[in-house]
Amino acid sequence: MKIEKISIIMLSLVALAWGTSYAIIKDTLEVVEPFTLMSIRFGGAAILLTLFYLNKVKNISLDEIKKGSIIGIFMFGAFITLVIGIQYTTASKQSFLIGSYVLIVPFLGWIINKKKPDVYAIIGVVCAVVGLGMLTLGGLEGLTKGDLISMLCSLSFALHMITIERYCKEADPIILTIVQFWITAILFIILSFVFEKHDFCVIRKAKIAIAYLVIVATVIAFVIQNISQKYISSTSTALILTLESVFGSIFAVFYLKENLSLPMILGCIIVFIGIVTQETKWNFLKKQ
Image (tube, rainbow, N blue to C red; front, side, top):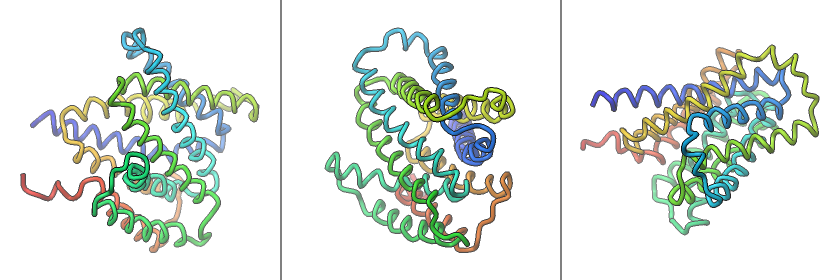
């Protein structure tokens, strides 16, 4: 029981790290160009994880490289839309817009894997439609270009999750993660060389934020998630990680001084209820 409680606390910290990363990214983009920032984040994470799991990497197969590369392409799609979208919307709104990707997954799974979603998934999507409508239209600026790009990011994350679900049954998930980090980093590096200036003097000004994104929000968060999920159920894990959107919104309000109108706050609550409904089916309220 003690290790289960520790796992719950650690997963909550993972949700906190991922949630706060939205505001950190938005703030850092004032100094560092977007493709360069993502190159450093995933390049650094790939190097650290490769060194951490060096024995596994030594035995990597061509099949694992192929599967990890496919997953990496979807991860790249998710993060390129994230880093572009956040420049045109608020971090608080984006955290909920992107967090709603878990509501899309069952319906993509229905199309791809012929798995019909249950009633909880339908309720979750209804909540998402209502909540996201209030969230995106409830501000003074209404629906922005950044909101639309962030919705596309949510779809990319859903496709990323579907691909992971398909391939992790056939290969080592740690190896797949390392490969997808490398693929994402390489694609961002290419874009950064084509479109950006690489002013490393500017990068030094954001070294603390970059270190946080690489070490805390990517490497440590990944390791903790994998270890913690050995000791608690997937239902409990899903419930805890839904806090990412909540932490992201709250942190953005305090860190970036963003404003949330009453309709936007209600929209966040409704989206959160939808996510919890779909991901947990409220099993945590039932007596075992």
